[in-house]
Length: 94
Image (cartoon, rainbow, N blue to C red; front, side, top):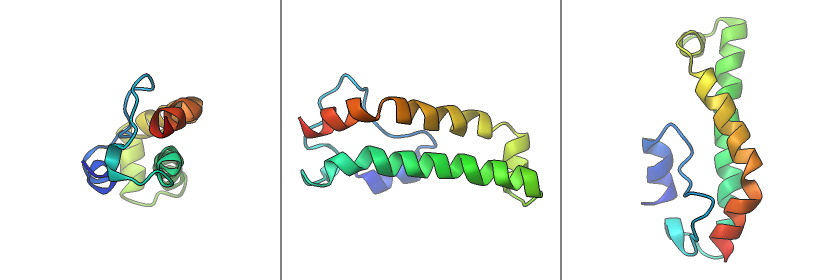
């Protein structure tokens, strides 16, 4: 599955287990692989930020998503990605 398809279909980061060797995965060229975790981290952190900002300003649909608990998913997901960044980069480039 391509990264674009992955990003479009899953609300959580679409990364393999940190223990998985992913050389050649996601249809990326070798030079692109190390950037995948960064892109996923930025997307995930951005979702958390926009939901929290919507809650603070009252902007819909983001305020509603916050009240439904979506920030409780996106915040920890962003932290998890950040904590495992080096492991995923290593799995993607080995």
